[in-house]
Image 1 (cartoon, rainbow, N blue to C red):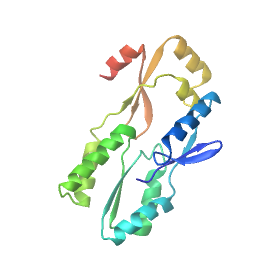
Image 2 (cartoon, rainbow, N blue to C red; image 1 turned 135 degrees about the horizontal axis):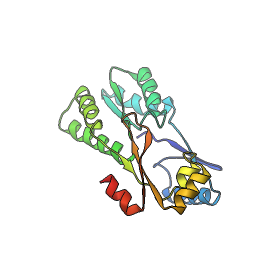
Image 3 (cartoon, rainbow, N blue to C red; image 1 turned 45 degrees about the vertical axis):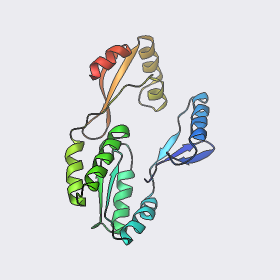
Image 4 (spheres, rainbow, N blue to C red; image 1 turned 120 degrees about the vertical axis):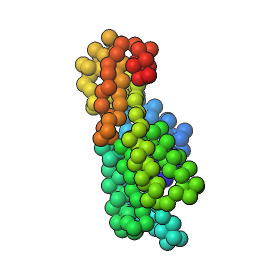
Length: 192
């Protein structure tokens, strides 16, 4: 795991590595400030630190990153693979995130334990990622507003009309609006 970093006004934390209680506390502080934290991709050097000892031990590596349309993590991993040994490292752009990315990682790990080669793993994951459909139903429009995806007026109107956007990650790995429906119940039905 090579984590992204999360930037708070007074602290930078590695995602999923450091103190989760502190992370939640900092998110609460940001909510009070009506802001969201920033994130940044891991630099290639972080990947080099992870890759080098594994390659030196004779291992091959398959990296499955968050969508390149959402983060520069994919490019950082590619750059590190060039430095460490591109003939021993394959980097896959998942074109997704969150649970869908986790699914691809678990699928690849399972195939690896069954003896699949690095090349076979890449082929399997590339095929499997085309079958994944990831839909998102935000609890509120507030975080879309804070993240700059919609304006204050849109957020207010959507809240007043009880509009629930159903989002999806498209084939290019970009978050798109799939549909806009009224009520959470209708949104779940639309996803189904």
